[in-house]
Image (tube, rainbow, N blue to C red; front, side, top):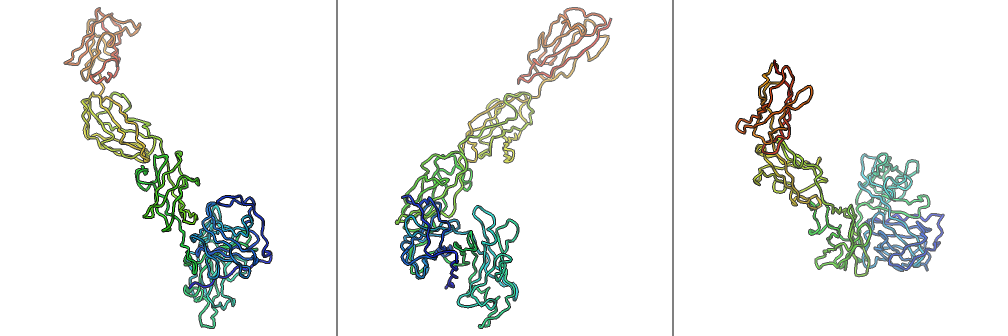
Length: 573
């Protein structure tokens, strides 16, 4: 049996029965126009036991206690009768939760109302104990836990307290049943401090626990006993000196209904998950979808839950009945914009009380199709190396890239074996042909719609072509470059590395180097020897410099242009 709780002391500054009037519009969830927060009464919350205690009420008040989460009422206990000015819920001698027992969590709001429009409220503090009181030597005990302020960061030091509570026993150190640890300088029995600047873990330390009780048990042993003592972490409220709002975390306490209460614990439905039909992402754990109205599924916590409501970014987005097996499946009734969304669910009991899921799902909607931002070899490029790789750079992370969806074909349309690799950092897919590509041939790269981004959006099928080299070059020429005493009736020739087309007057020419005047000539080409011959129609001038040019308009069979060239020589007498 758990030791009895240590009831907070009513501060002298608080007058019993003094309440602040609060305007409540008629709605399912009261929205207070003026909030008495924390109010003029003491409200103490025990989240681990789903218990609430409120002090300072007159016999005729008969308060109602509500628990709200996200603005929705998730627990109610009505018309409670004060005993010695105190009302309690889910504690022997007190009232019970109606329909379901709320699973009280940090951040929930607890309201105590004496009329529909009159009451006080507090928020549940985020304080935990992660290591109960533990004896580290004969006279020292430590306790560890966490304390997080609303919005993150540390709670103010004066709002944090740690306690060890002994059941029906007292400590020799102070003659009381509790050992308290507060901020340095607080005068408490021990000290509680954060474990470092900015961190939200804390350590409470009690030293000098050498005293021994009448039962022969030392204070250090009594404090560290998990059978006779309880470890607590406490939020003392925003005005700790007044003490009108308190959250007490009890290590190892068990939640749910406490006898004689029987309303089942409403832990809320499971965190929603994308349905298989709308989980279009690459992995079933990435929570990415291309559907703007995705579906979600999960299971309820209570066997008699009647329905489940879906909330996306806090907005109601659909509802569904609970299946016989306790599962739910809901499709969003509104289209979602691209981007990240937060999804929660709330199950509704037959009494109409809704309990939200403990956690939320972060889902990303992506309907934008990916694109290719760069291609190599470039579209319709020429003179491509016969050993070159083929690459495609994509606009976003991709999936489904492989040999079947990214392929290379030769000029006859046959697929060339080219294994494909993917670099997730650069978003570049690379096809590496297993063979040397045929020279001077057009090749085609095809990307199929089987390639998708990680949300499953397919790329528009597209293809592009390139032509392999090598480009033709002049391998020999006559007269030689800068030759002198050249015969005035000599022909000019250029031997080309491969068969070409386009050799003619104009693409192979001879000019007077000084004047630029074109020499009258005739051009012929031998396709077998690959020799282009320029035969002047006149005798060249004596002791004159001439320049021969051969143009890039000359091309091989694949369309690769000749590497253009010009050279000069000088005639003799």
